[in-house]
Image (tube, rainbow, N blue to C red; front, side):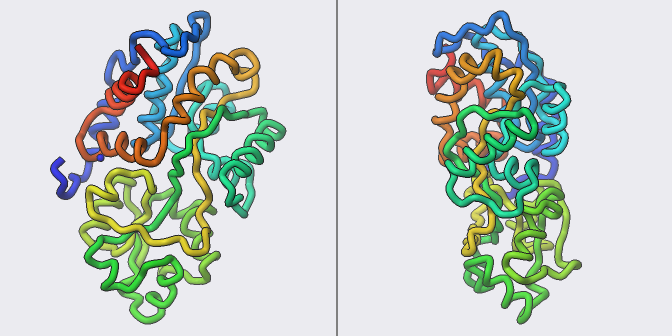
Length: 317
């Protein structure tokens, strides 16, 4: 996630298409954990943005290294599609974020600030209500944020999300926002942010784009000064974007964990924990940002990045 200049519109789509149609995306080799799942078959899914593609292919490669038969459904349309595929047994697992489980899937309106407590509460409630559980979470937090190009950071006088309110009142033409569709509609996105901070971005000032295009347009300042981003996205640094502080701690914690149905966990939970809990523990903020950057900035394929990282870290041999 080079040239360190502007990313071309459509690059993410090309990478995604290549990832979806590439043959033999598995890791090969053997699992360093020594786990044998040669009697098991799993269908692995993910959402359709870069980080999820990388996590999905980490899952595919790690499972293939145990000898499991793996069906690749990495790159489903989005949050709702991935969740429904899991509920409907169309996939057996995918990485979901604790904040998304708590707010979107369980219908809560207030996030839990403590990461461990949010994981524990989300896991317990999802098991009871939906028969879905989680393996251990990764420590990185891919929360939503707003970003602005660095040269406009001080010029606009917006260092915190609270500062957007006075900007709307005093210079509404500068309060322009580029967002992707989920951020525009989710309770943990723009609607909830506006309610928490007590202002409303003028309707004509909000522009909808695909996720990757949001970063480019925000870096260009055209048509928006601010853009919705994911904090682990490597394009933030590559495009010299500055994060706006969430001074009221609105955005939930988004630690990812492998989500699976209880029936799968009951049969294979111990072995899957042996494989994925150490992998999750190794995925900190810097690591995930670097993996994302290798796709979005350097143009590598998500499956190659996933397999390389697993090998380099000794998770597959």
